[in-house]
Length: 436
Image (cartoon, rainbow, N blue to C red; front, side, top):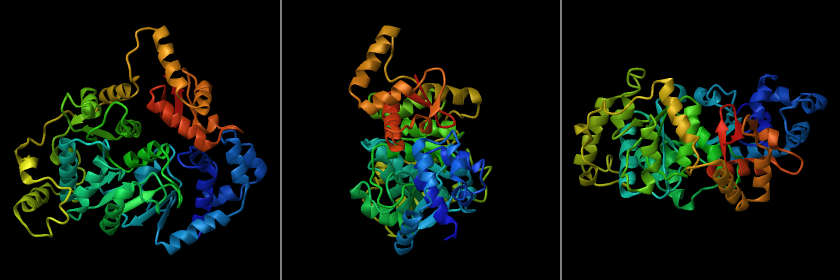
């Protein structure tokens, strides 16, 4: 553990998760230690910091940061600061990257691996469960790293599909590293740690609050070259992850679903707006095989898949509780690997971003629009309404800009999350938000 890690923990605690402040501070100071040693007057003169952040950054007490390190040492929790050479370079380049990452398990070589995030609903259908498990399993057979959020439903199936065959999966939590959420996934988390990675930007003991998960999603997409949306309705967090991915310049893939199922709304709409249609792992892997010829092995994947179906050897069928039977899966070798539509043009990516920024309901005129907005705001909290009132339609502001003496950073982030889910505001590149 680097001796300067205590200052990165201090900085992350002072600014809070998903804040753009550390990134701006690092444009002025070399590292967290330099920020720590900056004069109070200098810190208070920085207009991009909120009042609460200025107060926290002028507090040089390291006791809490040291207690975090003590906890991590005692519980075998690894720490990655943003300036650590092992920190994923892709993640470092996103808007508001985590200052510190807490992790358990084995770190993959992120910068030389093909990392594919897979997201979807907690209320997965049978078809979605089969697709998530099989695609994750085959990505692992080929040597790719899967990334998910370890929630119930699609996330858990993705992680299971990888760990069942000894693959490397990364689960990004919306809570502290010591808080298992949901509790039903405790055994799954233990299994992930054996061959994969569980990580989070939240300090130990942080409870899984609702607003943590949209913040967490930027890390899921930020770690990956591509994001696969399996299932989700029109308010699904999977769409928030897809939007993060597009803003970050990542590829978007989607598994088509039954047009009569509400859970097919997210992937089917993304496909209509330019995402690549995916029916098997090959549709994803063919995008990256030429750039990673020594990392990915499609022939090995096909061989291992046949072994997986044909043998009773427990090496190939460990804990097959969540796995579908061969009869349910079909044989993907029969599916043309080149099917689908590539999203390699700016025009196509612009179409997806346009879709992701749409309102959740169609408006016919200004009066109807205003009535619908007011109706949604009435059902929200006073803080939500206050934050909405500070936003503009013609220009964006950051979460830090919205903080004031009576509204904390966490309250602002909570309100922004709820307003975005309700379709009242939109997130923009650079960590800015504006009214729709």
